[in-house]
Image (cartoon, rainbow, N blue to C red; front, side, top):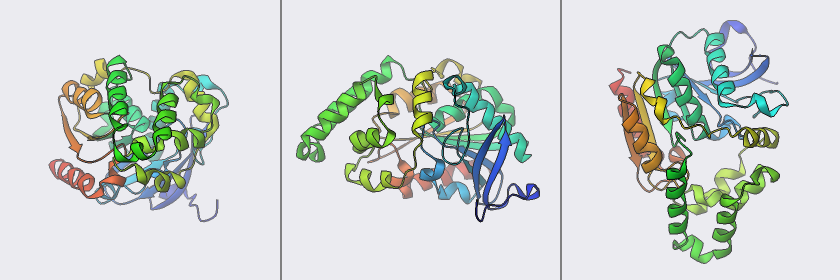
Length: 300
């Protein structure tokens, strides 16, 4: 814990911290200035480091990037039944209270986006706004059909034509129900290129990602990210910015972004062109531009 601030009087000064909430220890970083914005890790294994920095957010907010239970440097129970969506939502609320922030912004990517949407459904009264980045709202049959269309289309792209066995192995893994039998490094190594419009970026981007295989197995067991949030999205009453890469195969702009926009009256959908699952990495200028415009609309 070298260089980690532990002074409880400065919980929101820039630095690295630990907070004890809900009988676990949450590890978090603070960067930027302005209203508090909480940004969770995806929940199923990666630490929050991979999403740092969200430059446009840090220019307008005090951004609190945190490792969800049992990810990164955070602790968590050794029981799969403690990794349901409601557990992650409860941790977000407990961290908000711990930080002494009456109203916050919240942002999340992928599984982190699933968490923040669920939080917003239950706690809009504590929110200033939401940024949903390539998030999962409904992992239903409509989404599965679109995902397979997009995977099949990739087979004709230059990278996969040059690496045909890659596409075959990645597709087989996507269809498999036994992902938890593998390590996250094995999963990402097999199908990581699918996440990018420019698949050549995968090795470099994922090389520095930190994983926790235990929480991956727990969340696979509980079906974390499997809840259909669409019927309850209308309960979100604060401004929501929905950002989706046009080439995202797993959280696509049609079955996720468009349906989210249709169900949240206060939402705005921005589709980033020539972009996969990580727009702040693959198209940072376009990502920052849409965030800046939205923050301006919020008066920041």
